[in-house]
Amino acid sequence: MRKALCGARSVAGVALCLATLVLAGCATQKAPVVAEDPRTCAAAPAGEPLIGNWLSVRKQSGVAGELHTLFTLNADGTMGYVVQLKRSRKPAQGLSESGCWSREGSELVLRTLQSNGEHVDPSDPIYVNRYSVVSSSDKALVMQHQGVRTQARRMPPDYKLTW
Image 1: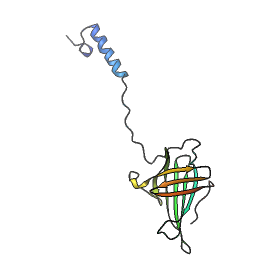
Image 2 (image 1 turned 90 degrees about the vertical axis):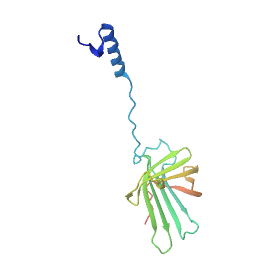
Image 3 (image 1 turned 180 degrees about the vertical axis):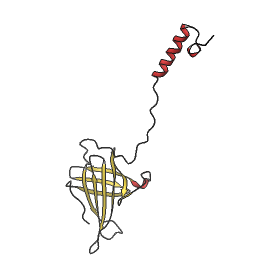
Image 4 (image 1 turned 90 degrees about the horizontal axis):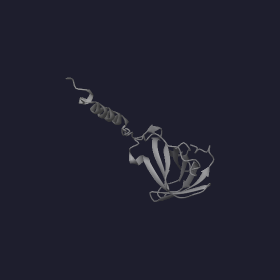
């Protein structure tokens, strides 16, 4: 005698087998774990007050000249970071980085994806910088990073540092 579906030999056995198959088909499966791509920027929340261009000009002990730093924080979560060392009678030297930014609580997080036009390893912690936001208004931003206080003022949207 041939075995019935699922080895059941009665109507009750077949019903039990079918019920098991139906329930198994309804069971939810875990979604595959997808690692977040570190090269994908997340848009800033609407109305985020840090969106914009912020310019800091300061002197640093042991460095001849002034450091001009422009933080460009875009609504789409992309950022630009340009720092120039300006010295009298010498051409400006600088660094230009781009990537993503986000705000985590009271911290501004900059994640560099390109430095001077070259792609960087996004998993290298040197390319993630965290600034504690001390205060911010529509005209001024004060941050702290590795013991250095940065005071910046809001600049027009089209403002660029000149070389």
